[in-house]
Image (cartoon, rainbow over all chains, first blue to last red; front, side):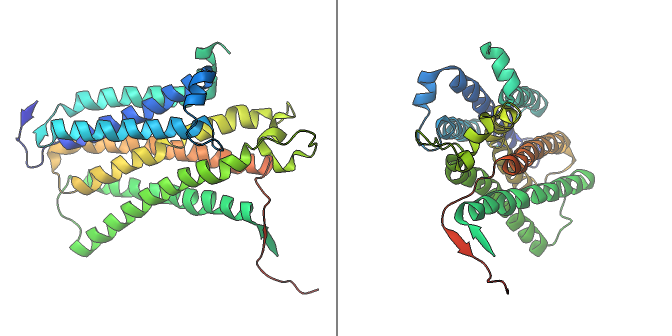
Length: 111
Length: 189
C-alpha cells in the first residue's frame, strides 16, 4: 500500500467494494444462523411483524456501513492493491450468494 | 373498479420501487460500459453529469424503497399467522402456500431466497453508484476498478431479478390482498 501516486487514489473505492461484499456476506451468515437457531432468530427479531428478517437485514447494513467507514478512514487518499481487494470481495460476494440460497443453508444446517 | 389497500402497497413495492430499480439498474450498466470504453475523462457536459448523479441517487432510493417497503409493509401481511379456527387461508399467503405440498416450495425456496437475496441489490448498487460518482474522472489506471464495479452491478441485478421474479410468481399463487377498498373508478352498468 502506498500513499498518493495516480491522479485519484483508489483506496476509498477499495474500502467501498470490500465493505459492500462484507455486508452481503454478513447477510448470508445471519440468514443461515437465524434459520438454524431459534434463540438467535428470537434475538434477531427487532420488529415482530417482520420477524428475524428485520434483525438479519439491520445487522448486515450496520456491518456494511461500519466496514465502509472504517475502511474509508484507513485507505482514503492511499493506493491499494485493488486486484487483491477485488478477489477477496468476490469471494465474500460468492459466499453471500451461496448462503442466501435456501438449499445451501439447509445443507449446512443438516435439514 | 376497486383495489384493496394491500394490493396498492404491493404494487408500489413491486412495480414502482422494484420494477423501476431493475430498469435503472440496466441504465447503470450502460453508464459503466461508457465509463469502461471511454477510459475515463470528461465526455459529458456539467449539466449531463448533474442529471447522471440525480439518476444514480434516484436508483439507490428506489432500491432501498423496494426492500424496506417489502420487509416492513408487505412481508408482515404475507407471514401473518391466522387465529385458531380459521379455515379460509386467503388472507394468510404464507400459510396458504405451506398448506399444500404442491405450493409449499413457493415459500420454502422462493420467498426464503427472495427475502434475503433482495437486500444485496441496494447494498451493492449504492456502492456502485458512489464509485461511479466519485471516480467518473478516473483515467486508464483505474481499469480494474471499472471491471469490479461491472461485476458488482451484475450481481446486484441478479439479486434484484431473483427477488422481483419470485415476488411476482408468489403473488400469483397466493396474493397479498385485503384491507380497506379503494374505489378507482365507478363503471357504467
